[in-house]
Length: 218
Image 1: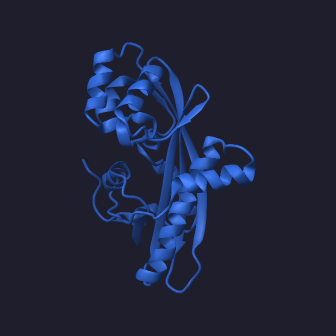
Image 2 (image 1 turned 30 degrees about the horizontal axis):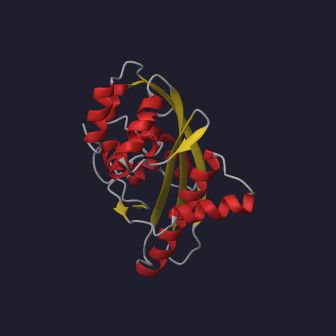
Image 3 (image 1 turned 180 degrees about the vertical axis):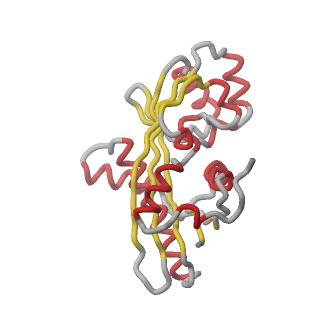
């Protein structure tokens, strides 16, 4: 059975490959800011982080499902869409994009605990049939070391790694040494909760092991 990842996130792609899944990766054509703004206008205020990540995950997956119907009508498998945001001290953060913003966040995160929210949208796609969807939001709390020095923050930001990841940190690469505790499925912090994906696939009648295309990395 085939798997399509509605994302070109290196972290999400690596995560699936590590558990024996080699997906087709398609970048969704979704204006995330516009989707979030429209939802906030309709609500009359900003969406809570759990609702927002799920909204964006669903938009990404739905876009790719539509494009597969046009470009690969014989696709038989699942499409996975995801989105992540980090909440700390009452504020919600996506990707920082700039070194100044990443540095500012790390000075705030040092010695603190925040929550990483990850939205998941999984579609079961079959030729000639309407797609079925299952969704869920996973959460994981992340605690940062209180002794991270300014020099370490500067070096980490200079590496470029935190600029394009939700919350300005990773747990599975350079940023992992500055994190002292994760409560929840650790893969949630990487970009998607594997246990959540397995449950959603099961809800759609898909056996997780049928998605394996290669042995898991040792």
